[in-house]
Image: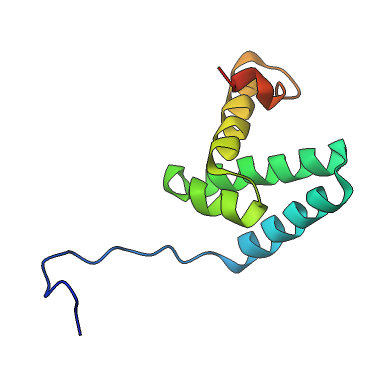
Length: 99
């Protein structure tokens, strides 16, 4: 039974790849448990890699799986893109993107 009587078009749902779910949940939990810089960098690298593979529409789902906010995931991706453009080995800390 439809509550909208067909007036609203169906929304496409994202089928999350199992390996993406496993990796992001594992790295996100690890970063929260240890709070170490290395684990945070691994989590951020996975966020950037999956965002590059899946595209812009996946950022919210990637952030949810990794245990960070959508805004923070956006900052992580922007920092990595800027580092790649400028040729830096590592991205700037995301606090650079707060303003």
